[in-house]
Length: 373
Picture 1 (cartoon, rainbow, N blue to C red):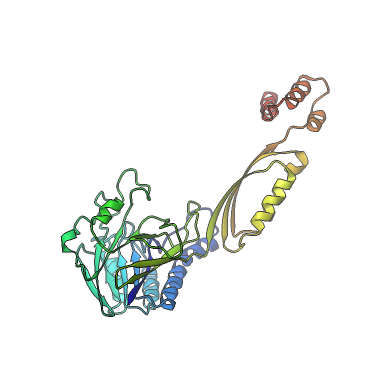
Picture 2 (cartoon, helix red, strand yellow):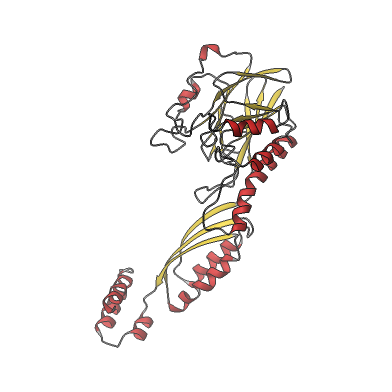
């Protein structure tokens, strides 16, 4: 006998996208987060999961519009397993400021489905014939130096139950937190609690890195819906099986739809430009958001094609940010067309081209242009 858990976190429902996107794209990215939750609930149902766990930051803020709360509750109500378990994270923390929002959600979720982890105390439940103890480490503010799990005492752990910790915050070695203000904890602090399994949130990358037949006591699902160019994956969650002997097996589930990609490429010939264009043409034109930086040197004729290439690439992706750092390649033909024979610039640039220093002609040309101004 085993229990099956769908583990996600950091969905950030209600996130507002302020980059230079069109209104249609902003709306699509916002709605995608709700659609992602729908897909995860469907997957959890298809996999016959017993528990659906959100380890913090289901919401982007504690000021969520009622319509978004209503939509969230409607999606959660479709879960067919035993319980939906939600932990407040550092974005949707639980205190007097957010109590109304959370109460509104609880009122809209059907009776007996939701377990809301707003206290540092053991929550007991039964799945099938197996007793499960949940040990929460909730967030009561946006920032704190408290790891929120020190209340868990090793000597009170029931060995015949499945003991699961759920918490949110930075983990040393995995999450950037130089100021130690995002509920910092270490794997050692998790380990000494002597629980069977930890379901973590806050870190937007997956841990463990493996995707199949994963055996671990600690799981970070990553954000399920990518939210910007600092997100280099396509979104994921964990499907975890805990057997009656407490052995654990998990696999990573792909959850995202839109994806963000950053390409920095050096192009020094027209063939390089065409190769880059063909590479980008293979992306999903409806779902890929691309930040492209090109650098290098091209001759006059090839340089003129860059604007056309940029327009072509716009048609290959949903959104494009293009930074063009390509400079004019200084060749002997260009020098002959641009400067009088035997003039100082003519002789100087030709001499530099004949040298082994490939950058020197470009630098000298830029300096000559400045002097001519």
